[in-house]
Length: 113
Length: 115
Image 1 (cartoon, one colour):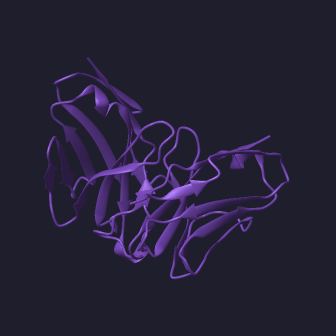
Image 2: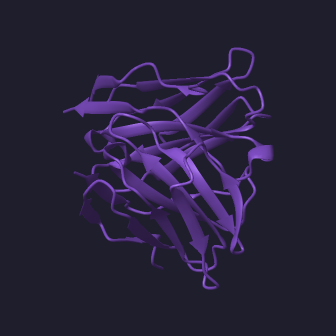
């Protein structure tokens, strides 16, 4: 069962514009959500996270929004840069699951210059 | 400071063989988790080890086993390899075993190909 879903396999955005990556989850026990970025031949790199007690977290060009009632989160990148081109994974965890992260399938972001 | 290191980077095995993958966590990190990433999917949790004890296990068969050593490094063993075991195996380390603001740092992975 896919508890974390990223329904868009890929996204193409013009440099300077906003990139919006979406993620849905089904398990209401999840209380912490993360976004990871992955380049080819490298491991995932932590980007930004949000606790379920918040609805927004911002770090520079990256903002994550959480809508608990809809079980939906999104990552906004503004402005998008060519170096942002990578695979983006949404992940979720729950206190009772310890360190286990449940990942979505990923979205390939291409930023065109 | 060195990040999470994994060895080997690539490995080719044949069906029925066994394989051992190794991971060294970031210095000071006591928790190591293993994930399997099949092409086109996100990483899937296999194991978590903390202070040398198994603290969590994903939905993987008993052919998969792991252990953690006193220096907190870890090995993942897979017996009786199947074609479907071909994947990128990722190791992640963190300070402790709880969730929340306990960020996990991933290594570059070991690419296993089973022929």
